[in-house]
Length: 116
Length: 114
Image 1 (cartoon, each protein chain N blue to C red):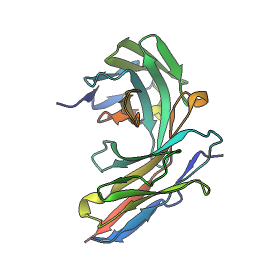
Image 2: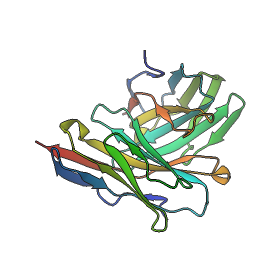
Image 3: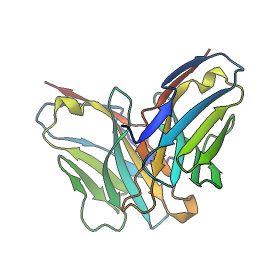
């Protein structure tokens, strides 16, 4: 079974609107962390936001927020007030605990296109 | 200056050639990683190293080898390149002392094997 599932290969949003990128995960480890990375067309990977499994509140970083629903094993990224520069690939990733040697596992990504 | 650098940035080589991709970091991080990215597959872990004497295989290590020459340098080698190793290769670093232990990525090396 895939550990990280991103079901939306592509998403479109109008500039200035909000968009939600879906991510579900699968782990039996009680201690884990969830990450979102952005990859613009230039290719670099940019860290956006982190959510720990024991965090009580949803993470926020500027226009990015993470809708963490632990019971449903989902960690959706919400981008508010979309900008043209938000057009990129977005990857969800999970880091599990000691048994997995803290390795990072990535989903296949969602390509977001922001329309003017 | 970039904190994580990769050389070369682009490389075209032929089947059977030996090739080395190099990664250097000035972040002072103890952990380093090599990933490959294929279209539609996300990033897959090739090798990772938690310090100079600790090297571990990732999901797809076959056909690759690594060397951690120093804390700041981590090299990936393809002993005999084959066309299906054509991909975008990323080096990354992390520091277990950081609150999130997030990984910082280099700019990537685009490798084409003909």
